[in-house]
Image (tube, rainbow, N blue to C red; front, side, top):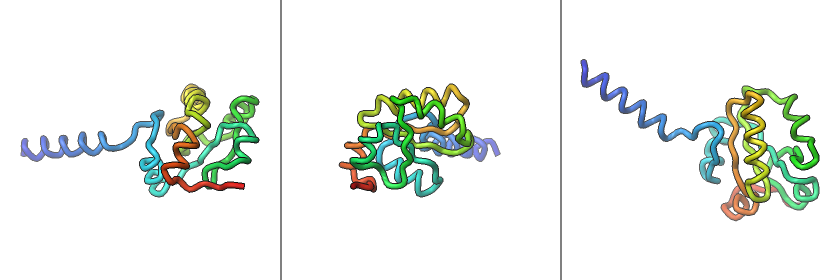
Length: 126
């Protein structure tokens, strides 16, 4: 009986170690897998000009620099999963921290749009 409990505990610990933690950066592969399995909202925090030049498929624009992001996120469902990205990962990292402070539970930073595009993540281009 003791060995069954120990084996079960080891399995649970190993399984949980494989799951990305909320408020972390995801690789393009992890993002694609999580979006397919769990869904969620993809948020582009770049400027409207950057967004118009190309963005991830299904992404919604919420411009960090203009202040739109801070206003818009107040209307979002805090129980949903959110995937943030920008041009370099800096603005999306700041946005992630803002969401974390506001009580969002599942927010991931995807980093830089050029790297995501180069990795083969689906994009919508003009």
